Image 1: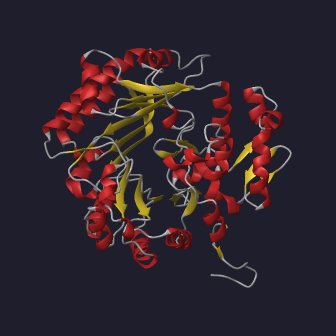
Image 2: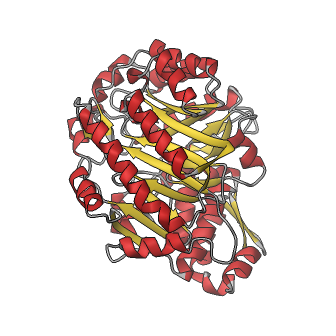
Image 3: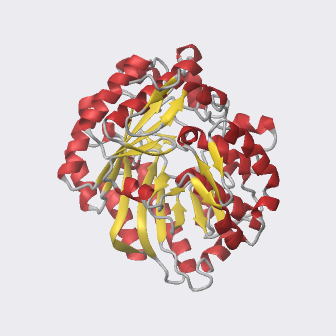
Length: 473
């Protein structure tokens, strides 16, 4: 791949840019993924159900009607995947899922009156856990309840996360019949040794059967979730996985970095740390994957997301309409996010609200007729300005200084003088360009954009705070 003009230790990607391993080593420290700002660990219990209800009622202040994006969290799984950091309930008792659906509908009935009839939905996402843990009848009842309470846009995006071990062609057809038109399939890795090490055995053939069924049933975009940095993983084994993934040709690929935090997530304690690839191997796996995906024609959307050039995510990226929320990159930047279920996080105007984490607390509050809010935050003027900067850098790779000044009524260079001084270090390494009116992430800086965004995160000034996040690479 290298030519004589390429500096040592730099891989030249045919479609994308150049990324060097030394930059990844230097900025491979822990940091937030910035699916929100402030990040969820900054939410406070003082922001309660009444505060959230107040913002629901006045979310369209000024007459600007924001469409809704709905998120439904289904926590149930039949078995534990050792790498998982999601809020989940491991059970084979299907009656628990039936009960949960009934309480989801109760939560909807508490939420909808606060919206004042403004219930147009452009996006719907079922996540988990394993959303397809729900039996068809339960899923049907829940979708009917959603459609009775909300107005679904005719051209909306309605996505569901799928564990290919739990569905067959008939179930895929039933999901299409319920209105889902986008699917994310949990693949992680096809190597048998890796699958055994993380307790997730799923033959590649099963994954491909689900993919083919989704295409036959008219799903418009299909995503594969992959994880690098898993136990027993090597450059060679993951290259084999990628070869099969590329041959299958999903529309989108999410290439996540495994965050090993056994002190926080108990299932990860079952992973032998000596089986994990070291930092150098992780970098090599990631850079090799970037090359393979680029050569296969996938567009690097940002961070760890890739899409085919004609996919809506790529189109949004080219047109500057990319957005980021708790489900990753999105094409709808103007939606408020209303989330239901245990641990789900809503974003309404200048606030975030997170629901309680356990089923018992969730059921108890709904029995009392109370919104199940555990904590949240109402953003200050400073938070809003910093969120705008961070999201612009994460999604567009650049931020207009003038636009921030106009929108937030501040003198950018004076207000963010310490941050601009800190950015000089990134500029000296060729990772950002600091022009008179713009801050732009360079091609070499794209893979460490999280580290660049951290400069504007006022909550991350203490070095020890970084230990709670996953590594950037």
